Image (cartoon, rainbow, N blue to C red; front, top):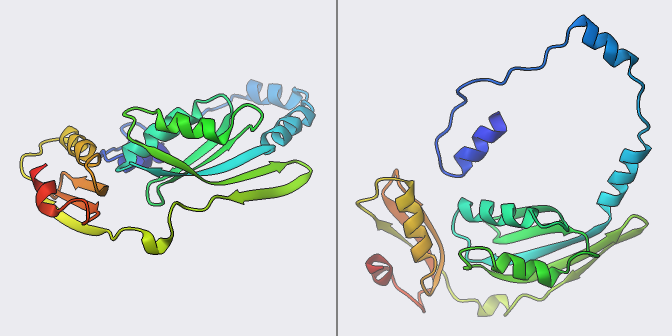
Length: 213
C-alpha cells in the first residue's frame, strides 16, 4: 500500500491510504492443512528462473521525455511486449534499460516500438547492447553517441511565471505543447508555484519565444 501511494505521488498527485489492507488470518484447521500439504519439487521453479536469466539487455537513449507521465507511458507499453522481461526508464538520464528475449525481438524493433508510442514524440537510439547466456559471460557492445561532447549545443535554463493554471490537466497540456517546440530539451511545470522551468538550446529558441508559445 505504501509503495502504491509513493508511485501515485511520484506521478504528481496527492495520495493517502484511506483504508489499510486486511492481512490474511488462518484458523487452526487451515494451519494443519498447510502443514500436511506435500511440498512440490522446486526443480520446475529453478528451471523457470534459469530461463529468465538468459537473454539480452539493451540501453536506449530517449529524447522527448518531459515528465513522469512519459516514463510511466513508455514503461507500460514496453513491458506489455511479449518478448520483454523488464524495463526501467530514467527521466533524469533520458534512457531506458530493457531486458528481453533476443530470439523473439531485436533492439531495432524495440527502438521502433518506443518511437511508435503515442503521441509519437520520442526519438530513440541504441546506446548499448549486452548479450548473456547461462553458461557464458556477459558481452556488451557500446554504441558511439551521436557527435562528441564538445560538439553538443549549449543548454540554458529559464523560469517562466504562468498564471491561469487551475489543475494538473493544465500542467500536462503546457508540458506537452512546449516540449515539442524546437530547441526545448526539458520542461517542468509546477502548478503549486505557477512556474515553468525550461531547459533549451539558445541557438534555436529564446525565453521570449517560449513565453509567447
